[in-house]
Image (tube, rainbow, N blue to C red; front, side, top):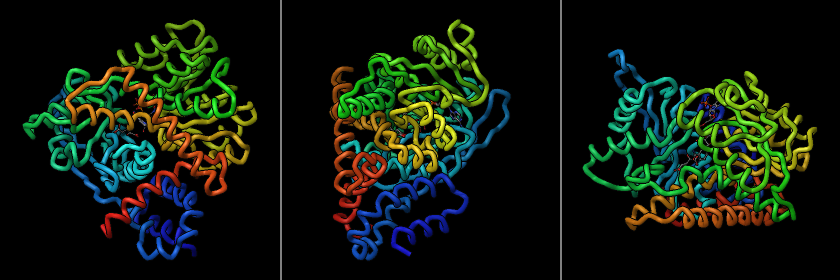
Length: 444
Ligand SMILES: NC(=O)C1=CN([C@@H]2O[C@H](COP(=O)(O)OP(=O)(O)OC[C@H]3O[C@@H](n4cnc5c(N)ncnc54)[C@H](OP(=O)(O)O)[C@@H]3O)[C@@H](O)[C@H]2O)C=CC1
Ligand SMILES: O=C(O)CCC(=O)C(=O)O
């Protein structure tokens, strides 16, 4: 067995029943084969792959809170501090009933390489809970967030670990978490990102992941003498990433014809009305049926189906493993040119392989959705210097970062004879910086 295969087997054996974590590790290790094989004896002696696939720390805790009926509820809380070789742990908090330790480990592992690609000094971590924010009152959300932070605050700090939003965690939740941290620590410091603009948040953080996704696809198109003008785009999801991806795609001249949530999807041949989508999802926190009811050109369908729509560019922006092999086959049959991941690991391994075998440009999440965490790191910089930059300043830095990521992943792929394999490029470029820092810091 090669060293890479041995380490993958070790991860499977030591982390039973965590299939998403195994999937994320396998994809990275498979891409790293040419790098590792060029210097296998050295990496094996240093146990570099064992160390990089083992989190620094996994924190599990009970989150008790009282609902509006006076009933005590109990959820599981997680924070996985995966790797801080290049900076403080950084990564979001996911609140969704499907969350397990394995989910958080896969997300934390991905975050290590993504954060490395941003070119900014941030390590990788992730956290969350199996708490379901859907249908809860603001008081219940606050009760949960206060209880969650009452344990989490012991483990985080502006130079230690800086959490942020993810699925189910938006501005409201970050506000309640920040309030409780401040109360417990008596310190006003940049310990969370995605904060409100009146208490240390950065302009353009809300837009950053979706806009960044479009900026990197635009870099790819420019590099291939193409543009968004006149292109049809399909997007899944109707949350933070999806909404701002749709907004920027339309600004760049494309027509976006789909959006989806966990119960159904919209086909709107006139192009998604972003103002209406924001009203339904950000303000009312309602279902997409309300979008369809207010928009005569829109069709609403129950279940999943976004990938059956003919498109030039597909942007999965909802959740992991939402784009399957059959979807990839349909996309290819319909002439798709680019698939770029706004969500973390939304494309199954089989679907990714099929797209790549069919020479579809495939931009993986750890590069394509890195704009969000990059602007979070810019929020940390602004908090440190006690200044707020303008929207234009942050947005132009974001554009430059996404352009750098595109160049770096393209160059890393080329260096190892994998021209235009952006999965390999992202994993190799992300790995090299972290591995180099780990080696320089000794056996830790
Ligand atoms: N926010 C950020 O800055 C970043 C987010 N990401 C990733 O992007 C993805 C989306 O995150 P974000 O937009 O912030 O989250 P939101 O909670 O704002 O939105 C998530 C969207 O995906 C849908 N969704 C969630 N879970 C499922 C599921 N199991 N099946 C089908 N649909 C689902 C939700 O539907 P419904 O409305 O019904 O809940 C919602 O429309 C995640 O993978 C996240 O990790 C990556 C980088 C940064
Ligand atoms: O902004 C951040 O710190 C984290 C964003 C995030 O969770 C992600 O990139 O998946």
